[in-house]
Length: 108
Image 1 (cartoon, rainbow, N blue to C red):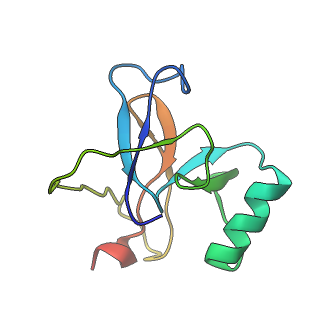
Image 2: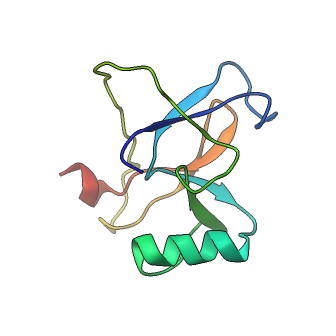
Image 3: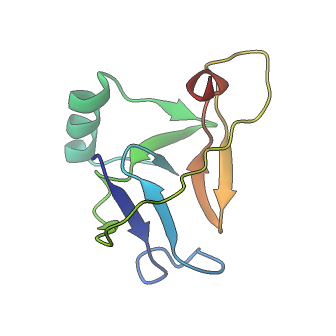
């Protein structure tokens, strides 16, 4: 969970350009979850969360993701969209893949 993961074009054909590298706790937004995914999410987060009508599937739980095993220091960028609720987030497309944005609360 505490590492980077890579979504590649073979597993995620909707990627528009290059592979997408994200943190393990960052979520892809999906229409449904398996029972095993639900169990792991509840163990990790205590509940299942929804953003813009889609389930949040953390990268470390998604079987299609691969661990990014390149060692080194990396800059990590998070995007939060302005709104009146510091805890809200949105679905955004990152390189063609629907993922969650960060909540403003997490960037403070």
